[in-house]
Length: 340
Image (cartoon, rainbow, N blue to C red; front, side, top):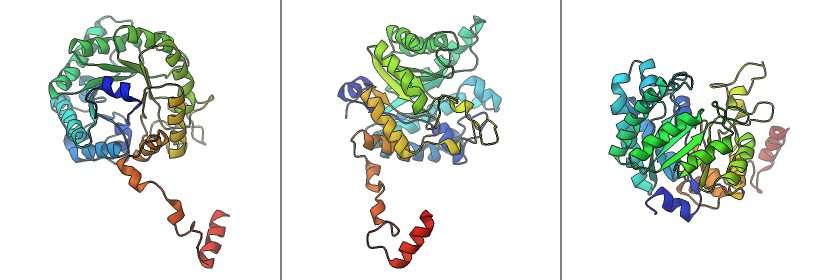
């Protein structure tokens, strides 16, 4: 296997998989609301297993679960003292599993919720937070760093600078929460062009939008930049009326985000179609974000023409008793009523 992100990108599409926080919350290991990855220290085997499931499904990058593992968030849950231990342990777990399947290891930072474009002092606060996380990731031996879910271009540029100062390749993606521009007023394609000009190896979008409403934005970005482009949507059926998962409403008119999104979840076939669309657009790094399950990742991998370890267990409905050609009369009657 290639030993760098650049090598993988030259060889073809890199398949990524994230959404660790949402999936581990569903499994009962993370508290919805703060979404701090305490699981890294409290139940490391759960993190290790999810890494393995994503890798078996075809993911080529094990992303250290350090999303929201920064000083501001840990303070919210009274675990600021665990900051360094949590970040180092997350990278070690990701690296351990990556070695089992020849995957890359990515460090991870995200929007801090501390940045305020009207307050210059917050830039130093944000820089210090990133320096801690990226510094520990670098010491633990990551292959590159993903800075993601960036609402502000200027905050993303701080992360990029910190990553570069430590000599690591950077993938920087924006969260397309707003219709056309970042929260500091940059059209998404222009923001990606600026990030690329500043040295980001990969630029693009992640989170907030499902495939249907993210793909049109990424098409414009692909036309604008020459570097590698990444797309990692959430697996939810967003549309023109509700373009982000935060704007999806339940039948009662209540906000579904963040813990009532289940009825809007994309099927594996939806995500397979998305992967093919992204490939046709020339996207280099195709992944998935909050809400992802290993079955989504496997479907995406297989849609890209890959056979992965989990393909051994891909559906074969012709072997199901209710769908076989030789189904008994009793079962046929049952199937008729079931379909009705």
